[in-house]
Length: 306
Image 1 (cartoon, rainbow, N blue to C red):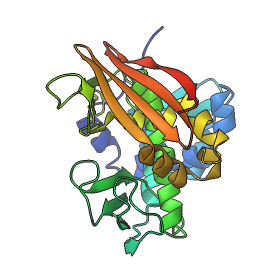
Image 2: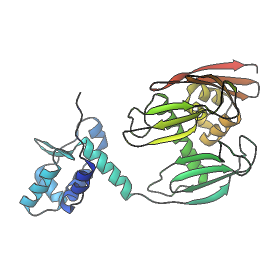
Image 3: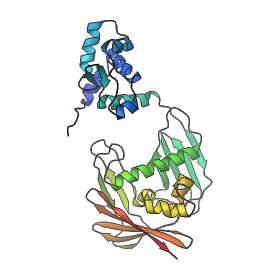
């Protein structure tokens, strides 16, 4: 196994600070085929085609700037040139930037009540953050029931309902990665810990919190650990059987999970917490235990006849 050698940030900015080099990269991006890239079968762009695509008349000038890009953002092949994996990552990020659009949805009263107090929920979308707060209680310790980044590029979100659905999809994906001790943004091993505010074990109104930190990309977060349940297959199946699973509506599924939740801290070293989800006469439980690289997979069981 071997790793590539990404360019240092200062060097990368210098490479991208020249119009000819950017034109060369854009010419390669125009010919880029993601399916061929995934199959390691990308057709190299011949020298003459690449120079024509970059619209550079001076061969010596073109050769110089092409050489500056080789070994970092571009790979040379016998038949021509292709983007390197690092080059693909950089160009993909730049393409997302060029299609970036900033949308705002003003605070709006939501039809569903707060799952903790049945109070009024209000949602908004600003700075790419989907926020939901309860007007009547300090849901999740501070009044914020939902605060998730959901980028929407190349098209205005239809409404708040759409971005709420997307926010839960983002949460489920992130929690699945965190369970295995991985950063949701870059897949690098992350520091994951459970933090209990309670002095001891027992039923708790104050939830255990989860903290995630990634030294590789700087991503991280802090929030209630019970959100991990959203990604647990047993919990998803339990609510699906009640007609409230993810396929029935992601935001409704999240509210159902929170509405039916009770918490019991079983141990404090390491932190082990049991969550019970009750709907009518049925219930299911999962246990979450901290380990060195994430969480023990939640040990789940269905409990009938509650």
